[in-house]
Image (cartoon, rainbow over all chains, first blue to last red; front, side, top):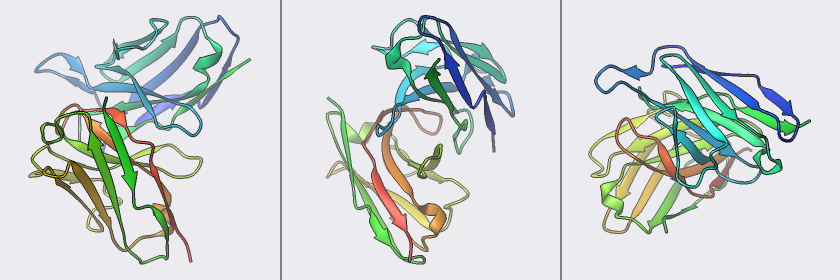
Length: 113
Length: 120
């Protein structure tokens, strides 16, 4: 199975500053047939289900603010929030859908400093 | 608007069984694969099982293989998860999710979840 490892486990960033969350896959999730990275990012707030934010590693879901961006390829990926807002406080998960069963990272808790 | 509503959660003794259901609306149910994802209290997300739009293909996490069975009824726009031989470590909120594809799709819509507690 593919193991997804996020870093850090928790992160405190000042309002308006940049936040960076990393996600590493145990194997490449770049598919040679279409040159796409099979990676999604989710945001989860307390008491709520996860919400899809990014897929194909860098494509924002409709309605997601453009301060959120995804990057990376192969085994190493990053979720970046360019200017942290109070409403961005949440736990963020990466997930690979290259191989079954799909697998999630352990989550990164993002807080305000 | 896509809506997913889980039901069937509750308290069950170790070794017992429970059947979860997910009622879907707002999209052509039979055209989309569906999945169950769970989250133990205070923990991260764990994929449980998925089923193709036709219901002809399924897959399971190793932790539930042989104990859980996923199914769907496209005439009723419902998906189910039959959980047998339940263990304490199966305690979690179980989310129903709509997938973008099968087998290589991601969840793009989630229900609110239903809590399963396995305890004596």
